[in-house]
Image 1: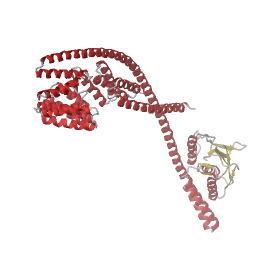
Image 2 (image 1 turned 90 degrees about the horizontal axis):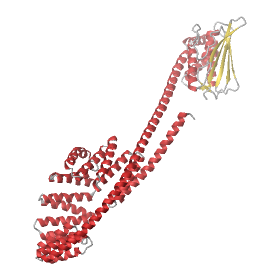
Image 3 (image 1 turned 30 degrees about the horizontal axis):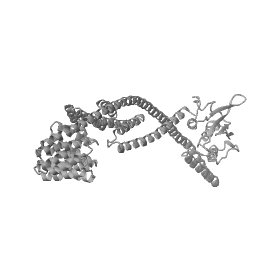
Image 4 (image 1 turned 90 degrees about the vertical axis):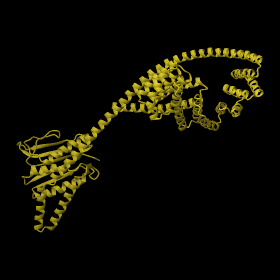
Length: 622
């Protein structure tokens, strides 16, 4: 097997294997992302979320899926920025993500990573740096309307609130809500509406506050989100309480409380009991608070105790208020102890996580190095494959152009040969002889000559347009030509044509008009001056060609020559001979076989020229 073909097959095998592997990889990646979106994105299982994010990175890096790697980096930066703040890890993955995003000219992922850097600045209290970064990103994010744009606007609004830019923050919140609506994320829309309502409340714009609270309430009711519904009711109560409408406030607080009586929010407990106390409904407030005091939730117990203390103080029962204060302090100390234990455990967990992250980072560094090596190898493979295909294409075009040139040259030569075969002198002499026969009133003979002449002309014209003709057709044309030449020269020569029995004349195809020019030369340059000229034409079949020998007893018109050599300049060679030689050269190249053509002068005993022998190999085309 040639080395080029073997190399091509190897490259083809690698391409097929790579395609199959890519299909398996795509299926695995989709399964991993689906699992991450269903099992971990709710943040109730943060270790699983982190584990799946790392697995996604490992998988994409092994297959050198750069966009997949960047996406995994975004998830990891999101985790270490917005879920569990870790500046070192966030910076590490963000810098890697930015490197690949810029390398791939992916402005969306680059902007996403920089936006999370701004959020990290906010988390670390670097508001000036965050504001500058948000401003630099604003035109790009808004112009391209990236998928993360609603989160970007929501985060930007939070920064503006820190900077006391409430009106600008409200505009950003509204932009975020619009983006979430387009993305069909009603839960996020409701959250933003509640925040917008809160800002309008602080600005004293009650109508706008109610407008956005009602919009949020309708969405949460359609989602059947009881926690979010309770939050809306609580905010309605807060607004009505501030507006001096305690009855309406109490109604909404009661609606919120009834949705989750076992675990109400601290704000709801405080606000609800304050309204009851302000209305003098001490017994109702007391009953509510004692029920809450019995819950298992320590935070709820503390909130209830705190409200009970205010209730007792309002009633003037200071001794009871003092006792409740002592109970509150004990509960609070218990909570602090529990909180300390939790903090210690969390620190230990963070230490363990940090250790694991260091190990993961080392593994990632190793994987990234392997990925870069794989990338280089693939680039080399693709370049090699491309160069190989270019070489193949170049060789193909060279051979095709060569074939086209040879074909064009062959057509040109055939046209020139046709012109030489339709020699005006030959035609004129033939017609003159026919006219003479007619004038002599030899009508039958004249009719025969006319039929022979017309058939010869028709065959020459037809054969000149064909790439191959049957041997019998060419033999008939040759015979008609010799008959007319005998008439032209008044029977001053005779001829004999012999064909080997092995040649199947009607089955074998050959190029047209190859041996007729040789016979023409024998007549025109060999026996034209003789009165007893003779031409012997013999055809013998070999493996893939017919060997034709033409012998005349003329004066001799050439020295021994080879098809690859030019004839001696002092010998007269007809145009048809030159064309025939060139046609043989073209056929030899096209068919990739050697076709001989040589002329031999025959001498008598005295060493004088006594004739010429011409030998030519005629290729069999079918």
